[in-house]
Image (cartoon, rainbow, N blue to C red; front, side):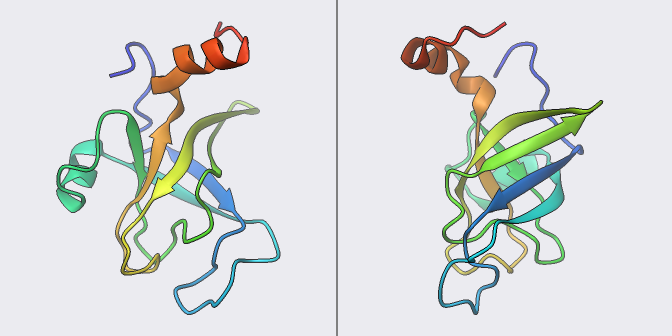
Length: 126
């Protein structure tokens, strides 16, 4: 996995985006919207998306119908701790049946790509 980086399992995180605000919406939101949700255990997430979820991903629980939706892709998943906001993921995908179905939202795990980010951006990870 990512060596010494946290899995964030059980931690509350923030997802945001301009995507659809419901399955019934016909277009993306004109406003930036956000949700606070817990990070799901990766092994549990894998049972939803057989063969699609890897250790380079983070999943959020979407119980209660709160999740990312169409149009949110690429948006940040943020962990807030001791006054510091850390981007830990980028919105990747969810179930095609809809964002209110209770299936996990899936994010690309930023820490899995720190070397690539440093190489492409010139920003060195400390």
